[in-house]
Image (cartoon, rainbow, N blue to C red; front, side, top):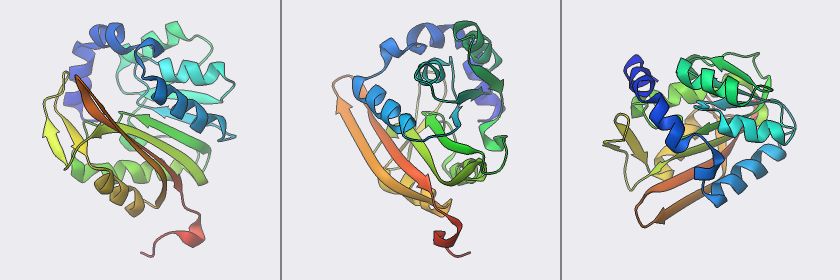
Length: 206
């Protein structure tokens, strides 16, 4: 996430928190998917781009060892107040910190939507660095027929076809396990991809 995007979210942090900062705004199928995915990981999870922290709080309440990371201090401050038993760090997803191979899973729920398409692979490789072999990655994103920039409510974002984002994941040594799309009246088309980091002996050749 660039400084411009961080600044845009900082300016509208209170509005974003009020509108989207709780599970009450989450689609039932998304709640089921994220919960089921996290429950089977069996290790530490990073909520990358955690925003107001509602996903982190939900997973922690289920006993998941999870920490939230976001670049917007206002989001992290709110998350710490709202979920005092959880860990939240200010951090850049493009330079995600943590012991190499230390995480069992990364949740990136609409966290990469503002990345320029040419930079997404770099961020995915950083995710791969902190995941253990076989570790899980769950992406939520705006789905579209082609990679396309559009005017998001906060700042410009991108739609992705499943196939294009799958290619970026494979180039970052992830194997795609499941994909989902959803459309509905008055809502932007949604996509989700469940992937896992390939073990060293199955990764693509350099």
